[in-house]
Structures are given as structure tokens and as C-alpha cells.
Length: 324
Image 1 (cartoon, rainbow, N blue to C red):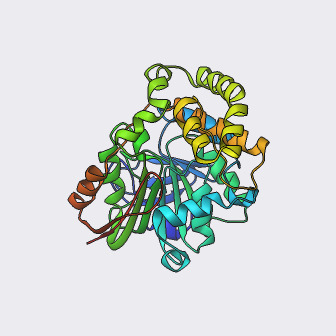
Image 2: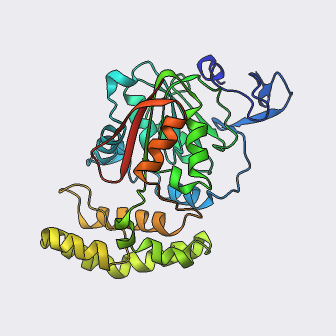
């Protein structure tokens, strides 16, 4: 059963009418359209869509980056650094995780006391829901929704906060995606984004050369390619990064066609290889990869009525702002 706190912020994505519980899920009180609520997930879109590769990715790497499943606390560090929010900021707030994937950041927001609408276009919502329930959360705290940014099932100006970390650049129209998320935040509420940054450094990254081909490949073909690249180049990347310091990291980053990841000094060879495979596939397989400049994202947020725009001190482009 969907709880009242969630119904208070949800709406029909077609007509913006209020939603009420029905036998099959929820029903719009304005246009009468119904949406299914199945296995703990409220669905507003078909299962097959342009985010299919992310569904495959997060269902395969179900808990790889979850802090509750490892000792590295990498997701918590990222969340704190990229949003600039802490437990005091989130406790009691109703929050959107836009592009939740397997729920790695949803879990952190929940642990900090927020009520979370975890929204994703892909079937990664399946993994997000199972991860949250296995972590001990209930529908008193969260609702997983499969929906598009472009047909949001959330009322405008209904949320205290919204965040979307690593997602905007993978949508067909990043500016419109930002505008749709921004419209959901109340005056006085806050928003946070992390995106790939558009600058000269991006051309040092192997992905944009490989993606001239890989963006047209099937997810299965990209998976096989990612496996091949990781198995071939990871041993060298491990030696370069672990034993040669900064020069090794630079050589690995510029010359090896994998996304090497070792997020903590305690991370061993096997875990590092798994994280590298995950991010290599993540780099090669999305249909869209559209980096955003600092100037662009500041202008977009200002146009949406946000002030106090701050760039966070973290790799990549992380920005937070407050709704006027």
C-alpha cells in the first residue's frame, strides 16, 4: 500500500491530477488513467526504453557500490561532497533521488532521516527496491517509481529537496531534465546535481573516442567489450596506480581504455577489478553522454529561479542551489 506522504507529492504525469489508491495501483482522479503498483514499485513507463543499459548494469552489480555491502564508505563520501548536505539538512525532508539506479544514494538519504521518492527510467528500480527492503527500510520511508524526467509523476513545488548524481548527462536533453527536476522543489528548498563536466580535460578520456562506435552497439556487445578491455588492461592499471603514484595514475587515465577504480587504500585486486568493470561498461554503453559546462548549469539553475548556486570542491562538476 502506498502511504499518504507519497500520495501527497505524486500526481498523474499526463494531466497533473491527484492520484488515489486503486485495486491495481493508483488512479488519477482527474483523467481516470491508472498506473500499476507491482512488487513495491509504482510504474508510469514501459520497461524497454533508452536507459536499458543502466537497468542491465545495476541489476548485475546489485550491491557493488553500496556502503552497507562493503567497508569503503565511498558512496557516503560522494553524497556528502557532491550535495553539501548532512543529516541535519535531510532529516524529516521529502526528497527526490532522480535517476536512483540501484539505490546507492537513496540508502544514504534514508539513513539520514529523509523520506525518499527513488525514481528511475530503467528496470534498475527492481534492484533499488530489493536493496532498500533488505536494508530494513519500508514504505513508511521510501517509494520506488519507474518514470521519465519528461513526464514527472511528482507535483511541482512539492519537495523539500531533490538530487541527481551522475544522471543528467545520460538523458536526451540535459537542460530539460534539470528544469523538470527543479520544478518539483518548493521555494526555500534545495537541489544538487553531479554531472560530467564539459571542458578540455574530457578529451583525455578514452570513452569519447570509443563511444563513436559503442553508443550504437547493443548492451550485450558493450558488455563483452567491457569484459575484454577490463581483463586485458586491468593488471597493468593495477600496477601503475598502486605502485607508481601520480605518474602511474596519469598514464593509466590517459593511455588505458578502462575506467580504473580503487576508491580506498584497503580495496584489494578483486574488488578494484569489479568496480573497474562496472564503470568501464558505464562509460561505453549509455545511448547518451552529454557533458555540461559550469557556465551552462549555473545559467540553467538561475533561469529556474535558484540562487545561492555553489560549485562543490569535488572531482567532476557538482553544484547545489536553493529555490528562491
